[in-house]
Length: 486
Image: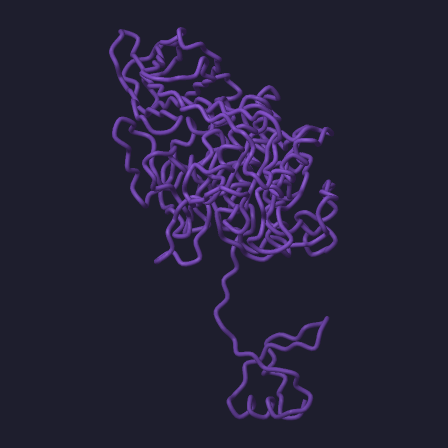
């Protein structure tokens, strides 16, 4: 081109009419005025970030996937989105391209990038947690924020009807809003609403693990950060998001902070939510672009659960055991905000739950069967079991989880007269105590809020410790509980 010297060319593409130039102001003005130049853009600093492998590295799901071959084989994962499905027709979506999805034929084909990113975290062939799992996908509404409870429940029950294999985990990186409610139904974000009660029933009576994003706010400075519906469900696992500023840090780094968009529960009369936190930022995933939100943190946890079920298939129907395992092994906490233990329980926090999900720790607890579960009548308390801890360990942790035993009679679906008839018994109050081999009490958790108790302590002697669960109060005839330790 006239006026352009060869030494001005820093790079020339072989595949398109594109040049990078070091050029004077006079030369630039000549280029801009040329009819042969389509456009000019000034150079700017460029940062290239790691892809999804960053998330799987800090959660250590990549470690157990690649070193132990835990890829979710034989596990069914249900994925419910807000407004669309993952698109596997685009070759640029290399993480999920050609993945064998089963799509819900009851909804229109509507592709959404959000759904593609969630799918890539769950089953991405290169960096996903569980690439060998079977994925079933559906969504709640035809447009943004107009899902009815009826549509949500029917889509979930479509997932529960899959049989090849059964759906063991449902990931919901979406929320129910106030748009259309049945007659007489009220809704308050951050409350134990009708949808949360329904999902508690689904988890308990239909043997499925329910994972929900805690919710992401658009304006962190001004928006109320209440957990979105149905993330208040006791029997589900609600996941918040953390951010690690330096993507080259290793998993054990303390330089990780609660994402400013991550929601948590402020109400005193509900369970502590989120239950734990996971990395929530995806950087340039194989054609899917970048994304940040608790929508990405939830499938990270759901994918790790699929890995653990692959290691121990019985966990597919053991909701309280798998939840206890994840909470007991999430000992690594966020650097900011500081971990603020709740009165009566040193290891539950109303912003980060139990701490950062850790797939490697969880796999160790599963592989060594460091957990028990029991269905106990009210007269069977106190319940005791034993665990071995070593004085060489820097710390030990025990988690107790029990289910809220909601049931539905009659129709599962809302009608014009209101929601399904859900029995909603008050949840029992259980307390957790740990005793050293000589009988000395070393840790206890006695909070009256929620259905989780967690203790952490430093073993001073090696040997067999006694774990005791008491029931100060409760109205149900039985309690389904689980204990896990690390």
